[in-house]
Length: 120
Image (cartoon, rainbow, N blue to C red; front, top):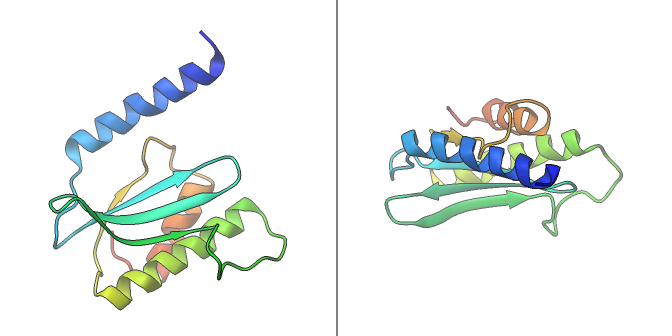
C-alpha cells in the first residue's frame, strides 16, 4: 500500500467520524473546507435541502493574482466566504474541516471567516 493511499484513507476515516456528528441545517448551515496542494475551497452547505448556498475559492476570477503564500490565499478565501454569507443573510455556521487537521491553511481560513463576522 502506498503512502498516498494511507494518507487518503486516514483523512476519509476522520472525515466520516466528523460528518457522523455534524449536520448543516437551514438555520445553521455547514461551512466545509477543502484544500488541494495548490488551491483552497470553501462552501456553505444546507444539508437538509442538499444545496450549496455560498462558495469561494482561490480560483475565482476576482481573486487577487499577485504572488502570495497559500496561507495568505486561505485568509482571503475565508474573508470572502464570510462576506458572501452575510450578503445572503447567514451569520452562524457549523465548521467542517473535512478530515484535515486544524492548523495551517484550514486554521487561517477559519480565523479569517470569524474575524469577518461568521459565528462558529
